[in-house]
Image 1: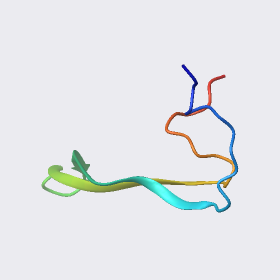
Image 2 (image 1 turned 180 degrees about the horizontal axis):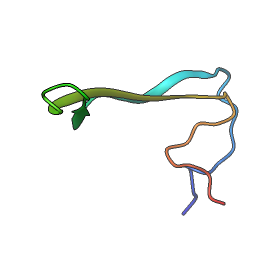
Image 3 (image 1 turned 180 degrees about the vertical axis):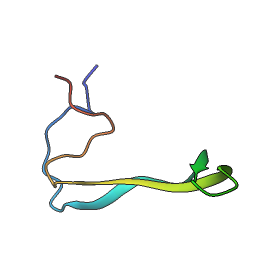
Amino acid sequence: MTDLQNRQEDYLFPIDHVGICKVQHPILVCSKMEPKTQTSVATITLTTSLPRETFSTRPEKS
């Protein structure tokens, strides 16, 4: 079976950004004032840009 994900191709344009958004993760905020610690929930967006010669669902293997 041909490995399509590792095939080198030129996709004619760069990808501005790819990623996931609205990831929620609990955090603990520390302070010198009272209350010393507070809990909250962070909403995070994780993105990266890709040059036009890179278009893969997996990072390159070392």
